[in-house]
Image (cartoon, rainbow over all chains, first blue to last red; front, side, top):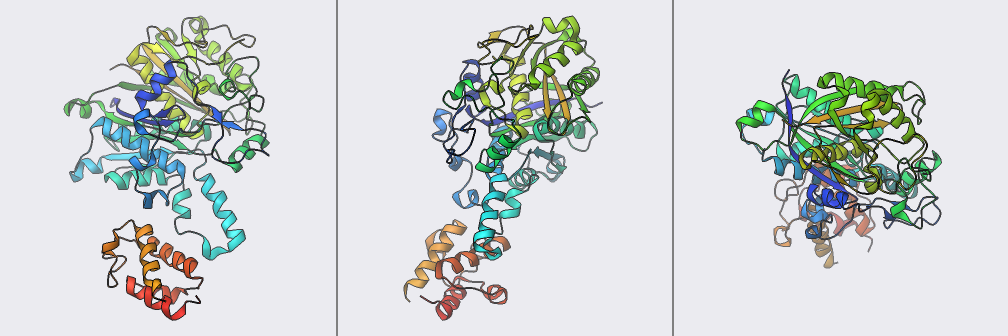
Length: 418
Length: 79
């Protein structure tokens, strides 16, 4: 089987623009959660989120003008803007900018989203109702469609290989990386630009997740404390926005062109719960089978995983995932470190799996693991190392990243050094 | 009525991201100003909005240059 490595990484998150900014702030135990600034929240139960900080790129903030001309910004939902920006970072980082037809044909794109252009759909529906169909923009549909992230990136760089997209709610980013890696293994492509993008922090997004009783509502006055995976006072997830994109490349292809190689994708496992539309099965069966499938694919024993980047959303499901990790790893669960970076970024839904894959890869490169913020009092049974509050240096040979989505969809990825 | 041309040109500059100097009356939206078919639909919507008129689809198809737009609006504008 062909080997797949990571040669480029890019991200836009509530912690800022770029991998370096993200990792620095993550390891310094900083939070990207704040009071929502983009719209009025007075009638919403949740008034906080992880909004991407807008501002000067030199300060690690996101400046859309550094990625797109104003005339193009108007035609794109925010999820597409984040996806294009993260893809640009990843492609620049990889140095893979071919111009010959064969190379372009062998380079594909697979960037997904959980919901796509939700705010655009909401705003346009108001235009339709208030002003009629003739006022609906010709860019409405191509701004809202999920696969247009892949479409936009392919057009920008001329990448004419497989053009695909994943939609599996909060597991989207992980499935995109795993599926794209398989396209390379099966020789459909030599290089894939893969990841997830999301921008659902808008009134209808918050109202919808509030109606599902999924979001935190107890910490509106102390936003940085709201995302607290495994803590006894957790009361729901905090929504984040942004994108994570990586360049996946066939190992010999990367070696031949002298690319820098960050890590290898060595394991990928998928499963379904067949249980409930929003809740995981209480025995964590789906999560266990995803992790076991990834371990089997990676040909690793449970004692070789040193870091687990948990799905850990700061909901009741945190303990189900922890139980699944204990059942999967047995006594080895007490030797690894597991943390939830959602404690700092909030939950980026379809982008979560992609940014967390990047954090997992960084943990191997840096031999250090990011913290779980706000873990003051672990819930019952949470007795493994959850890296409470402070990052730590430690040996990280292999890292596993979990992502689970509404509908009962699960994905686990395992990364290792080359 | 003389400012109609200026208002049309301003809309074209904003929507297509081109320099004002490029927006001559004989400039074609698609061939000279880099618009695609979706851009031209949006431009027509912007003209309708700015001048409070309706441009039927068959008329919109004939608006291919900046001058075509100015001419149509001059003949049809209410204000």
